[in-house]
Length: 57
Image (cartoon, rainbow, N blue to C red; front, side):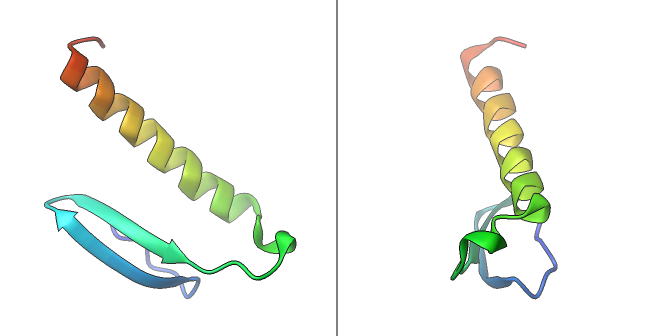
C-alpha cells in the first residue's frame, strides 16, 4: 500500500500493488520506530512473496 506521510518524498507503483517509497534521512535520529515499522512491513511482505514463489508457506 502507499504510505501517506510527510516523510515520504517520492512514491512509485512499478507493478500493481507493489509500492516503492523514498525517504531522505539527514540524521541518525531519523532512524526511529516509525521507519523501523515500515522496513519491517516491507521485509515481511517480501518474505511472503518469496515463499509463495518457492512453494513454501
